[in-house]
Image (cartoon, rainbow, N blue to C red):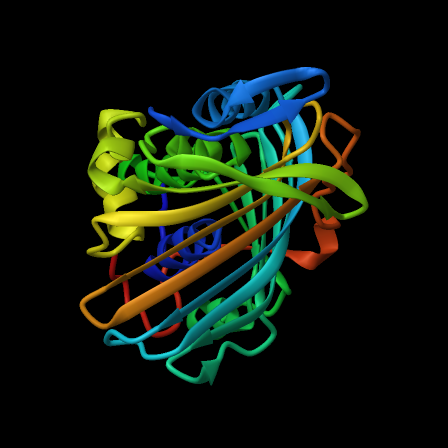
Amino acid sequence: MRRLAPALAVGAAALVAVAGCGAQGTASLGNVKLAAAEAVQQSAQKAEAVTSYSADLVLDATGGQKGTSKVQGSVLYQSQPQLATDIRLDTITFGGQNVPGGARAILSGETVYVKSELLNRFTGTEKPWVKVSLSELDASGQAEVRKFMDQARQFDLAGTVKLLTASKDVKAVGTETVGGVETTHYSGTFPVAEAAQLVDPAEREKLQGHFSQAKDVKFDLWADAQSLPRKVTLSGAEQGTTFNLTAFFKGFNEPVEITVPPADQVGELPDHPAGNHGGN
């Protein structure tokens, strides 16, 4: 049984990370007027029922030890008939340094395929993709991959919008067109500590870590006439660091094509990756 290389564990977490009531004002949804908090709750409920979607993501961060960072990419997601995601990160910049070639991860069932020049250099593999299956890993490695799978579930559409229901100051601020679709724009803040209570206890510390030391996160939500979230932005600032995340969602419950790479393009994770020398 093999152990999971640190680069894969860290890389997988990074891919996923890049991937939440009182009311003020009302909004029209079809012919029904809803209080803003109720509308956000309804949007969260509708998001939970979505079984597939695509999204474009941009994350910008400044300050802190890593300096200026930017991650830009896209996500394909499906929960049925089995969980599958295809995450493409075309731009990855940390501290002004670009990660060559970006990165891509495909999760299909209980197998993860990762494509990253940086990972290939670390492991010494020649194939463009590295495959990791739970059945081939020891207990420690299985825990790392399962953690990746759990994060994929947590940072999906439903999990993100659920955080917004912790807001006590959400309000409707008008109507706007997003991606050619008429939407109602909501704005507010949510306290990270209270939003963390809405997720699984095992994930609370990770959630708070993703939002750094921010106590409150500002959000904007654009929901269509069916209450489906078309755009979500999250931003915050604390102790000299700021972050801004923007996600555009589309293709709700439409078929998505998530295909694993051809077998001749996939290498196995070596027992002793180059530069690891048998480490964990």
